[in-house]
Length: 272
Image (tube, rainbow, N blue to C red):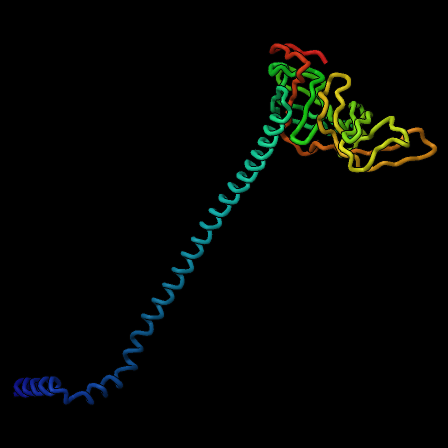
């Protein structure tokens, strides 16, 4: 009897539910059971939120580390590319200078610099095996740098024009006035010798090689006059010249064979 009564009651309730007569009962039960549902779902949602938060943080930390490593590698490569680009510009300038020079030239690398504060010398990566000879002129894309003074089979030593022991026959490009450019030991300073106080020399005049002495071909830029000082108590004017060549910054230079100097065979040292 109980089973039959519950079956009839169930059939009645299902019939009434399908006819939508129990919506108010369903709503009441939903309101009554809402706290229980929230009590069951809140811990699950909290656990899922904590897991997602920590997983996301871990993935962000790992991604940040990976991006930092990639950035470091990329920056190092960019630095290398910048150095290569600068080197390519220097080589292009040297090659363009060699075309303008017209004589036979050879690019050499500066492998060492004399650290003596009273000397201006550099060591080059070419020697007698490359037909380099003592007294050979060296230039860069902007002007005269100096000359070779000692030669070995694989390397050579060059004296810069700013060395106190170097003297170079020059002339003022504007009027052809001849003089001698002597090194002062300072990195960017030459001195013109034996010019009288009334000599026609002005700041801004271009100084070029005169070709006298037969060592340096004529017409090579040497520097620009920066100051002219006259003193009635002295027989000659004090003329300061700033070198055109980048003496302290070049990594590559041009070794020049003047047209009137025969090229010595490999392994021999040509005359000065």
